[in-house]
Length: 452
Image 1 (cartoon, one colour):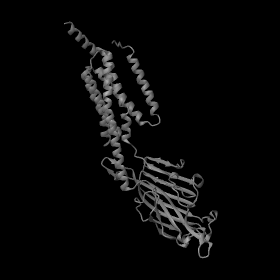
Image 2 (cartoon, one colour; image 1 turned 120 degrees about the vertical axis):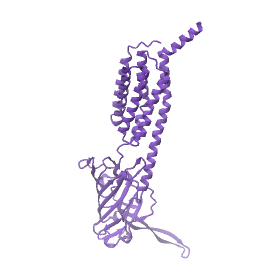
Image 3 (cartoon, one colour; image 1 turned 60 degrees about the vertical axis):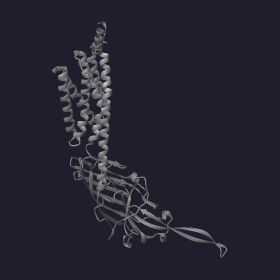
Image 4 (cartoon, helix red, strand yellow; image 1 turned 90 degrees about the horizontal axis):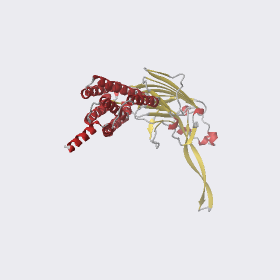
């Protein structure tokens, strides 16, 4: 009889002990970290799948575009006298060994007028889409007479008859027009040439005619280029003075690279943007002429990146990072209600509430793939709040407590939504919000009789 009473009293202590309840709630929170970790992996997997599909779309349409040129290429001779022993005469003879190198002359002026038409709806695969564009460019400028004397190159060593125009681009596949350059009064076609440079592809003309060479006067050039690309459009400021005007119907540009557009003339609105770059020779880190090899100058490129306005996977991932906080605070509210009202809540019921909270993130991911993030957040949040509110009414048997649970969840989800929308002030707002939440909990719990 005494043993049964001891067992009964021990079982009653287990049910009523605040310490035991706290330990069980803590263990359940740790257990729920497992499905939360799987949800984070799911978000990462879907995001990687998105990037994979976007890469496939871009490869077929046209990758990012970096334009490098046009540049005047002029071969020249270098004399290397060498002493050779002649067995017949038993004396040294001097033989002139000639090697051919190239001089790359950058244009004196370079003006680019670019009209970038973005239509991401035309290139979608399933639920994924990429920011692809078609750019119509009008490229104009002029070459002045190069000064070979600074390199001690005699005029008779300059092979003017082998001079050509070269144009480098990272995306030859995207070119959608017969590319020609008008040089003076002559027109030359640009053809693909093999290049050992893995970063760019080379287009080059045939040998230029005498009337197209800037031997004694400035020669103007014009190129009309239509090219497909994706995400990035950039230019290398090869002109002594480079002016680029770009307009587009895309409303989410990110101006990047070594130079930013003129802020005074920049216009940006819901219908697109129009910007202007002006880069002088003194603003860049390379000279106007290269002898021997043409270097890689991609570090000097500038332009625009066409951003997808909403990255739902990134926002979902940021939301999931607060999953621990949501579960812990929700359990804490139920625990305080249980302690104050003396209503017993079974650990299994805590587990069901925790699983309902984790379902929010799977709903958010799946709905946001087919709708906007805002609608997905509202639908997922409303569904979970209603589910937990109805469940709390059943286990707590009180409309007052159900209202408290609903209000707490609404405030918590609204707080998290505000945080993930912020960039610069997310940490500040989050810290202030958590401080207020902690203060509220301390005020509510200060008069609770904790017992054993």
